[in-house]
Structure formats: C-alpha cells, structure tokens
Amino acid sequence: MVPSRKSGPDAVAAALGSFLEQHPEFTALRVAFSGGRDSTVLLHALAALRPGCALIPVHVHHGLHPQADAQAAHCLRVASGLGLRCEIRTIRIPDRPEEGVEAAARHLRYQALAEGTGPKDCVLAAHHATDQAETFLLAALKGSGPTGLAAMPSLRRLGAGWLARPLLAVSDRAITAYAGRHRLDWVEDPTNLDLRFDRNFVRHELLPVLSGRFPVERRLGVAASLQAEVIGVLDGLLDPLLDKLIGPLTETLDLAGFLSHPEERRPWLLRRFIVRCGARAPRRAPLLEFLRQLLEAKAEARPVLNWDGLSLRIHQGVLYLVRDQETAPLAMAGATFDWLPGAENMLLPDGTMVSAMQLQSAGVANTHGVQICFRQGGEWVRLPDGRRRTLKSLMQERGIPPWLRSRIPLVRVRGELVAVLWTQDPGVHQRPPN
Image 1: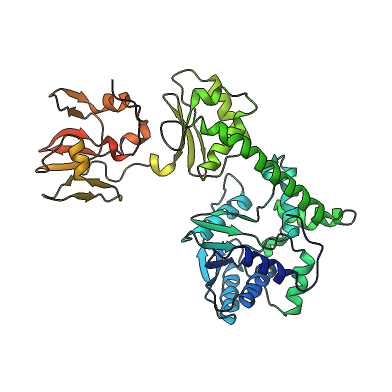
Image 2: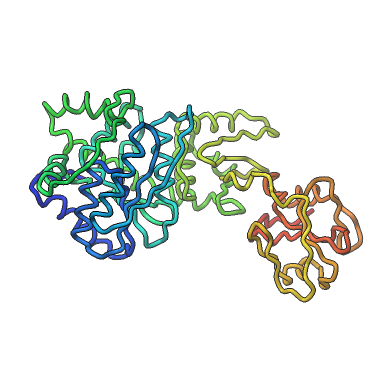
C-alpha cells in the first residue's frame, strides 16, 4: 500500500472510514491496545466512528519492563473513559528465546490477540506508514526475499478471524496531529527507546538520517507494495504445481513429484505448501538445510525440520506437515473405555467420536463386551478369518506414519483385540493392506 501524502487532521478518520465501508462483514472489532500514542489514536477514532458498536480493546501484558502493570492499568482507564471494557491478556516471554526477545514477544503477542477470534472478528492494529517503512528496512537488512520485503499486509488471517492494519497509508505526522487535536493521553513504552532492539535502532538512528534526503515513507511503501504484487504472482504460478503434488492426505506432498522440480523452485514450493496449510513458513536457512538433508539422506534416513509447533517429516515417499499435538504423547494410552449397550456413539475424552456404524464396518456387529482402547506396543489383532497379525505390521502395510499410530482407536471384545478403526481418520492411507 502506498503511503498517503495527506497529513491533515482527517487522514485517520478517512482511512478508518474507508476500511469500515469496505469490510461490513466484520461485526466484532478488537483493537490491539498498548496504551501508546498510535493505538490510542486508533481506539479513539474507532469509538467516534462506530459509537455503540462491538468494539473491544485488548491489551497484551508482556511484563518486559517495571512499568508494565501501570501500562495495563492506564489501558483500563482509557477504555473505561470511552465507555469500553478493556481485556488484559498476559504473556510470558522465555528468558532466552531462540528467535530473540523482540521476535518472541511479537509472536506471543499475536497468539494472545488471536485467542477467541471467530470468522467475523477482526483485530485492528495501529501500524502506520512509518512502521511499514521500518519493517521493509529491517527485512532488507536481514537479507529477506519478497515475502519479507512485502512488509506488513493490510489484512491477513489471525486465528479463526482476521488482523487488519487500516492506517498503513497514514503518515506519522497525521497520527500526531490527531492525538494533539483531541488532547489524547497516552503512555510511552520504555522498551521503545531501547536501541538494543533492531526496530528501535532503525526508528531512532537510521530513518531520521534517510528521511533528511529521501521521502522514505512513500518510496518504501511503494517498494513493499511491489513485493506484495510479486508474491501474489508467484503464488498464482506455484498453486497449480502444488495441486498436482498433493499426497494421500491433506497437508502432505508426494515426495518424488516434489523432488522432480528444479532445485531453485523447491524452497518456494515448500513455503507455499506450508502457507496454504494455514501455517507460518520457517526461516529460509533451516528450510534450505532440510532440503539439503533430504537430497543427501539415505533411503532409511528421515530428516525433520521443527519450528513454531510444526514439523516437516518424511514417511514412505510422502512429505508431511505435522503439528505438535499429533506427536505429543496420548493421554488416553493404556486406558480402556467400555461401550454402553445399545449406544450409537461413544465420545472419548480427547473429543474423538466413535460410532456403532464404524464398529459394524470393522466387522464388530455386537457391541456387548466391546471396549475402545489405543496402541501401547506389542499388540496382536485377530482378523475376521481367524488369523492373528501384529498391529505394527498392519499399520506398516497401510503406510500409517509412526506419529499417528497411537491415535487410531482399537476395538477389544471381551479383552481380545479384534479390530482397528482405520476409518477414524477420513481418507487415511488409501492403499489396501498387502
């Protein structure tokens, strides 16, 4: 988005009015409210434009400085003065996060803002044209490609809802003018002056020098918009290729087909695959290392890439995007659940629903004495023809990845394992057993 040259008193209201007009589908608005100048302007202007609407300020209490409690209290007072109820959400940043304090705080902040969002909910952030210029410069200094150089999108998914930045085309000067005209009161976050953080260094040391010679906000805003266009074109070219690579399950790729593409195209295909699954792509360096290991690995080797509660894994010629909850130990392991006589369904503690129809499809017609359990290891299954096979071999034949095996419900009748509810995971492993 190209930053506007308009710096008059109505620039903020005009930008917000345009956003609200373009997005009538958002019936509930939340404001990421730090208590600083920018978010105070955003909240005040929205309250004036939409009096009585479903507007909720949300303050993320990060605890990064001694004034954090006072900052949260200030947010409560300001919201109350506007007739609004501010929600306080507390995050705890690890002592030495691998990605750095700044990045970790940002990631956890958006996680907190995403909590409880629905399809018609939109969280609004107060980022403006100067913030966009800072983001572009930071991405360039870190050696980012088009995705990073596209800086901040004006609208993107956040949890089940959306995140919007309606002030990206508004100058810092217009924000200042609005705050002064309405005599707004705000707090300064002391961490914003800490030059140990890269963004603060760019804001206080680098941008002022560049702005003395160049119209930085406008030009870097144009540059970011052009990179966003490049990403849009690239995604349009990659999507048809990915559609031909979909594996036996959602969030999988056929490995041989993927590796048949040229080396320089694979990182872009993999990044686009991850984003289409609704996840954030990993950093480029570990992604390239994963691809290198994938090419150099022996047939039995299985390289893994872990990031943000996700992983890329390989099993029997299929590349999987796996979420941590799929690999976590199953709390129900070792437990058995008795089927109530005459019941049509059973709801397990993890939310899994098992139906009598599934039992019948698995060859269990009579539910008397039936129990549902899960794999622990070493089980044998009595097949309908009377033969007995190890559960492990049956799962291997169906190509079920190791991290999913403990999550497939098993059926015992009078203590004997007689069936596996393969259809519990729809569409899993369409290959018939040998």
